[in-house]
Image (cartoon, rainbow, N blue to C red; front, side):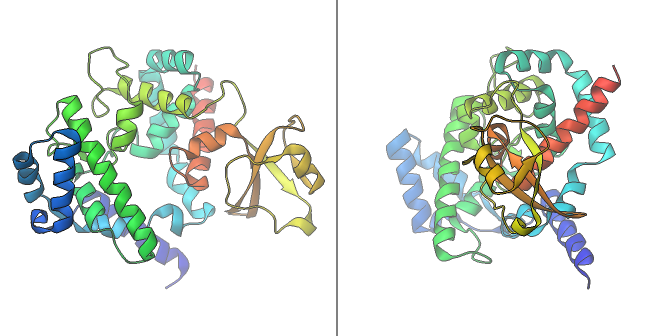
Amino acid sequence: MNIKNIMNRIVFILTLCLLFPSVVLANYTQRDDVKHFIGEMVKKHGFDQATLTYWMKDIEQQTTALAAIARPAEATKPWKDYRPIFITSKRINQGVKFWQEHADVLARAEQHYGVPAEIIVAIIGVETFYGRRSGNYPVLDALATLGFDYPIENTTAERRDRRERFFRKELEEYLLMSREEKIDPRELKGSYAGAMGMPQFISSSFRAYAVDFDGDGKRDLWRSSADAIGSVANYFKRHGWQKQQPIISRASVKKQLDNIGNKKVEPHKSIASYKKMGVSSADSFSNDTLAALIKLDGADGHEYWLGLNNFYVITRYNHSALYAMAVYQLSQALASQHYASR
């Protein structure tokens, strides 16, 4: 089987995981680690032990979530295969339509937070195809599954322990969020990793960055496009988005330096330093501007880019440089078509 067929099969399997969660019946309350978690929630946050035990007893292990988390697309695909998933005419056309339908809200968010409308639309487009694919996993079940049974496959014991702690913390945040928002935690659906709503916020991000942008007294990222738009913009501003500043620039390197470039996306080296290394940019920047050299495996060979602060901010949403590049390029396609149609 050639590499293209293998990649297509992986995409098909992951799509099934997203659309058709499968479960195993398991009484989590019989486990000591779950009992300890319940006790901590009662002690730290004043939850009712009987209620928590009742909820946890009904949790079903999400087996397809375990399979999907072990093989994220960002870790298995080169840029030349990752890009076509998100930069499509259908996603661009639907994004322009979404922009037109919510133009006033997007303009208000851009003015208030300083984040361009095309970036906000692109995030929602990449995450959930503008709210159409927000996930079918019970969030409570998905977080408990990953928090207590994170897969061993393709990971080390240290990483598994770290990831279990992360998802247990998100489970804690989710229960707190549900109480604060007056939502039954058993009712909400999301991704296999517990991300929720149109912008796919995890629980801690919801509590920290979600906003009521339509003024109805609720933070609703499932049904309110305004709340989703405002929350994405607030997230970016809080993570250091610089208004009206560049994001990334195409670069070239001297042939003898073709091995440079790494996966570090935080700007850490000056433009002047890159020039001395033989890296040139398609755009002009001051010599003291910090950037990160990004190397991607494109359809026509290696691509080099100089990522600036705002590119790094996009990776605070998802730490993958591939993800951030998909958001950036989709945003540029959206802006081009949107303004051309006016």
